[in-house]
Image (tube, rainbow, N blue to C red; front, side, top):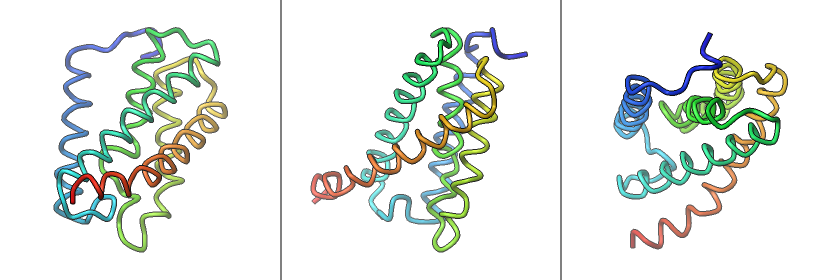
Length: 146
């Protein structure tokens, strides 16, 4: 259904609204990335979004997905862990990571020709890599805030 469609302006707006709304809700419910400073949260969220989008695009391209199809799939794929940020809920968050990966795989599968099992593998690798990069850069962001 969506596999051959490029991004519409409404879809881009919805993605932006979900990202900003999710960040706003996350900021008020819990300390995103264990930071109270909104600048640090914004920096790490931006890093996570950019890295996730880039890496999803690389994987989708490696599997032969055309850029016109890979871009929307990569944008929607990273939404699972960058919109409401459930993985940052104290004590329960890490149990949400498999759900985020599954939702990302569904988005990728719906927006591309990639089989669900491959989409699940790609989502898992990218989610774990994005977590690693964000945690790796977190001390630099904290130093920048000081």
